Length: 220
Image 1 (cartoon, rainbow, N blue to C red):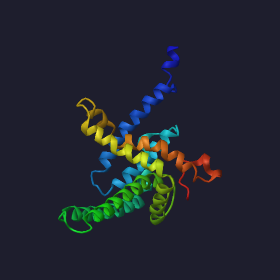
Image 2 (image 1 turned 90 degrees about the vertical axis):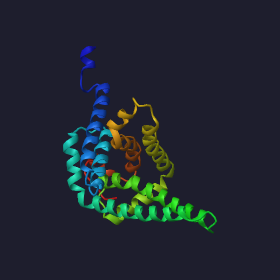
Image 3 (image 1 turned 45 degrees about the horizontal axis):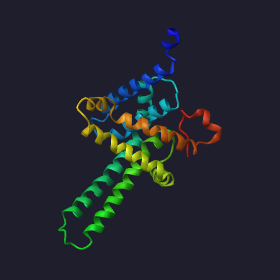
Image 4 (image 1 turned 90 degrees about the horizontal axis):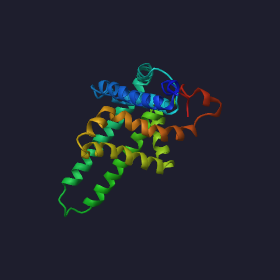
């Protein structure tokens, strides 16, 4: 019985091992995001690894992370800069609408419109890194696919957005002894939870003849 418990293929040890991988991913992600401009490639690499963890695929976390970081650097960075620019425009417009006098006509309408744009941006941003990590497509196609999938799978999109916002809010509001735990795992914990949903969604868009080769990027 003890021999079975200390077997590294034991589900308990595999579960613990995944959380160690998430901890390691958090360190890699924070280091690779220091320059900000590299955040897109860093986030794509996180999803590349977390989706493999969800599918129980073996491999070196560090090697897989930097493999994806290198292969997706140019395109993931381009997508990230586009999204960052769009976010800046939305943020400025929303700030402008909020600062308008309350009696200004259409103030509420303007705020609602820009909040709607922010929600759409969040939905697209939710999918672009996992899509980039899984499929090979041009930048424009990846962004379009992110928008299309976020609408087509709206309940899943909404659920992931709620969870993604709930975790940092919990970290902010939680008791002091819980905050370090959440900080240790950071964003990769969010990506890992999202990956359970992403893997199921993306499976529908995988060419059937290439299911056994999911580690390779395929065109949607």
